[in-house]
Amino acid sequence: MARVVVTRPINPRAAGLMEGHEVWTWPENRTMPREALLEQIADADGALVMLTDRVDDEFLEAGRLLVVVSQMAVGVDNIDLDACTRRGIPVGHTPEVLTETTADMAWALLAAAARRIPEGRDYVLGGHWREWDPDLLLGSDLWGTTLGIVGMGRIGAAVARRAAGFSMRVVYNSRSPKPEVEEETGAAYVELAELLADADHVVITAAYTPETHHVIDQASLLAMKPTATLVNIARGPLVDPDALCRALRSGVIGGAALDVTEPEPIPSDHELLSLPNCLVIPHLGSASRGTRLAMATRAVENLLAGLAGKRVPWCANPGVYSHEK
Picture 1 (spheres, rainbow, N blue to C red):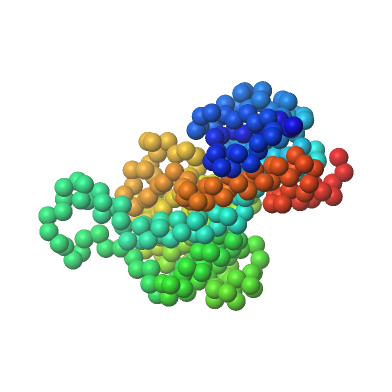
Picture 2 (cartoon, rainbow, N blue to C red; picture 1 turned 120 degrees about the horizontal axis):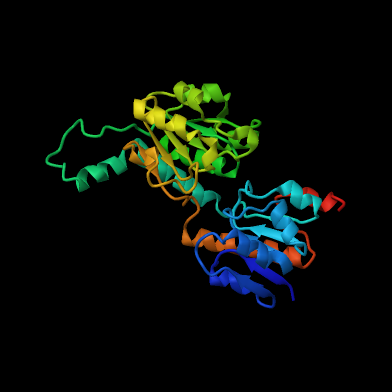
């Protein structure tokens, strides 16, 4: 019997798969305090963590018995993969199961921001709707426009597939061209500068790395169309928040919709929240009932494989299996 630490309550159906192991779960729906986390993993064989947990040398030093770390998310920028690999610890994550749900959210945010839906709701709630006005809250079309996608992984490709329903032209930028995505969606690879200048709407789905930090900065925003919509469903630090505030406030771009922010959570007094042309939601990209269950299930499957000494099926650091401790 292995001892497992789970840093948030997860779906009971997924948790039930760990029957037969000693499972300790942090009982609250908030990030587990660091001191408590380090204390609990001291005698743990496996850890099922969330993207709000920092897995670094300190964590791994405290958890000297760990044989596997499994994260209930796709992105692993909160985990020091190199440190895990050096210690021979595979890291599981949950790709594929949240792709379509997150792409749906990208489109929900894009439509809401481009057509100024939050502003319309505020207008009604504020008691300003007296009569129909042909010039009231004019937004931007989606149909027949150009969509730019920054980052063409699974989620980017899913966003591109949906663009066909709006007869959109799709351009994208990624670390390298993706011929298979181009064949499936008709998307065209372009340099980032061309994408920003050409796109009517820009959706960010790129992975966050030191190289992509603030990939959307002041120069990027100035290159965009004044009517453009910016959507970020990836990671907050891909966008410079100060530059975005200035761009939205001064009309450099038309609007923005953010599922993720820097910092995260965003303070309630942050300027972005005061701007009518900026929609912010609390990192809900994969937040559907079915997807959260699938994510929890996959995270548990990764964990159980690692505990059994088997290859973790969805491993974020596959090089661990060829690395000598």
